[in-house]
Length: 371
Ligand SMILES: [Zn+2]
Image (cartoon, rainbow, N blue to C red; front, side):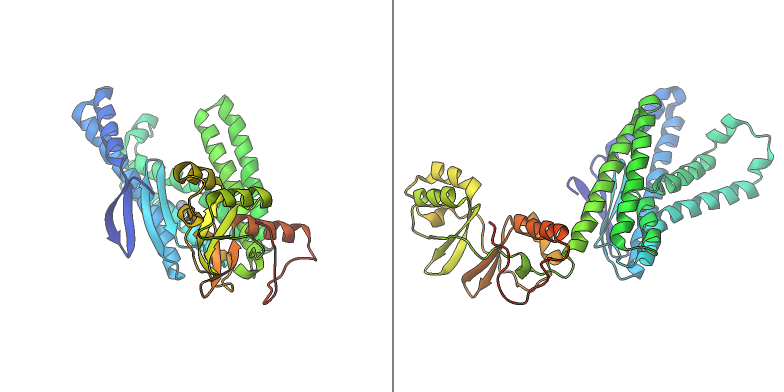
């Protein structure tokens, strides 16, 4: 995440904190001081917020170290102002593993809460007459409540909370992954709806959490649909193999005519069959403004060749779209086809709507031809 400082490397995992973190600590200290408690209140406040963040970090390490047991690395653990994130390289495919990885975080907090409870019990804290304010002012009690709340809040059975994944992994033991995800996502949305409505009457924070959960549920359902839809498909299946291309020294005015005539969004530029790169239609006007209509096509190239292996699973290729708007398959220096986010989506839609006529993995031949 941007704006994060690297602090340490623990058990092979980079630990980072958001740059706003020191400000939050100062803010808590100052507000304690101003509340009338003076220096001691300021120190208590700072210690409490540090302890709270420590519990969040331990929660994240619970996920990360459990994932490590199943051979899944964690890129980093980042502490944000509103919580922590463990960036796992991937989620486990096996529902039992997903269950353990997801529940490990809340389990850490539950264990700390139980430990604190036992400590308080043994110290005779609960033997004294129970006065609510005394209970709430005790720092160990506060830490116990904080951990119990962290465990319970994260176990809300809705994506993107841990509880959503726990629920999905339990359902996935009995039904297929897609159905399990859809049911878990719908339960999450129903909960979000209830929370959102309750928020209007009780606490606006609930509305914010409800929105967070609603979108988390939708995103997760879609992610799994895409993942499952792409299963078994390779680059070749979604490859655009029919397109028009331009010669490197053709003027840009020709290129724009071609773009209009064909409605093609990505225009390959070649020189004697050697593929040089791609001009994106929406950048073409800017290029003509800058270079003039008589400038050669190669001067406007804005996507460099990225040679894909046509047999690579689509699932592995998709992350490349984050840095490359269009990907290419080459044979030597010759362009064989283009892979675009649209062509992948077309393939997915096609397969969703034509159950039996599904495009399956093809080892030879042409596939979709939409640019
Ligand atoms: Zn968690």
